[in-house]
Length: 304
Image 1 (cartoon, one colour):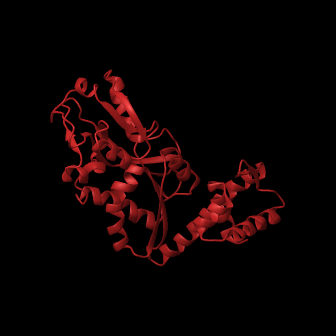
Image 2 (cartoon, rainbow, N blue to C red):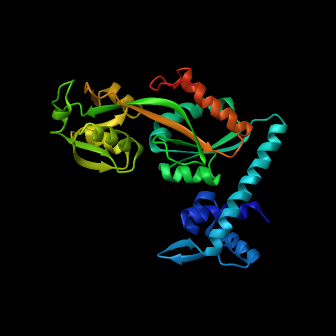
Image 3 (cartoon, rainbow, N blue to C red):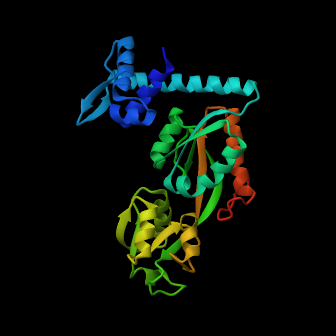
């Protein structure tokens, strides 16, 4: 049985579309359909049924999906193990990250890592914490990078850096450099959507101190928030790593709230029951060393 059939099956399941799966794995729609049909013929079952233009797994499909993940992961492990015996650091690492880490932090680390280990391919996908944890548990991602730690017994969490949350306004907003929460309460808050790591962190802090702010707008994109704040829509609360460049360029202004000293923690997570391969060990140590050595000066390293 061709391992690529199982890989294609997993992608179609995730995207719920033959067409989208073909785009991701660079196959034509007929070629993807042929691979799914080959699996169905081999097992003698129907794997998908169509519902509202989406392909959803049948009960037989759900059953096979668990085995498909195991087969693909065992195949990957066999390659990694063979490479380790040859003393090589090569293969593919699949990582998933939340938007903040994936856009503003990891590019600063992965570029020099790739230069140091050119034979090791990195695949990175950005998603929310729930999907990241699910992928790590299934073995569909080697590592996950998240903000708010989940209560998940099968996941090992490693605190790898801290960042500070900052209150920011547009450059033309008439407001003092030092303000109180009472003053900010009269201004509209532009913030991330419910469920985002950043928002969950500071909302709990506000709740404990009975601080009430007026939310004007919710967006699921930090870049969009920065534009709205720049043009005077209101203020926002964002990690410093996301607004560092705009702050230096004068496009956003950081204001100080004396009672607000909030640190955002970021974690690497991996599956608890799996021994790290050589590429995983190298990548894991490189992440920590990059922060501890000060290569990313906007972040602070935890004690190990």
